[in-house]
Length: 188
Image (tube, rainbow, N blue to C red):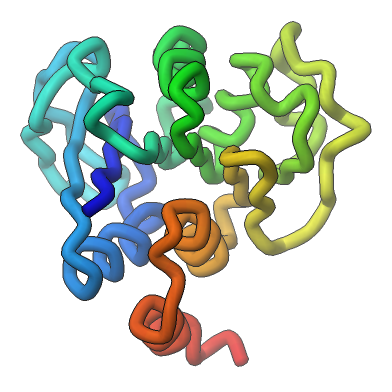
């Protein structure tokens, strides 16, 4: 069964990965691991205290099939960790890497969006990163984008973000679709 690692930060947006983790763990039996920069507990924007399983450095792409990074206030505060090494370790093993909201822009900062279709909160938020050279591949749309194992989404798209991660992990089927459909019923 696949494993998904959530790379959490202080003040992470707890709702952004919630649909993904609920469907993946609760209905599909996927292992969910949590990590923080140094393995210390973090508190989400909503006040949820998370004691992680490990530090980012301990995340092993040989054992983990997807790295998911939720957005959060840490980017607005200007103290977000640099995800470059972590993201490139996972991509070197052809693992799924996903970022939503400000974390999609953090992926832009690692250079992995330079040659794949992607989205996020805005192309201007990506362009704040010097290593971002992928503006021609940016899709200004409200749904998540998946291309070559990299998934991005604006913060307003946790439903399609969850669906695209599950599809990238070959977990999309009637059960996953039914669960995501239930979660997104109000948007029909």
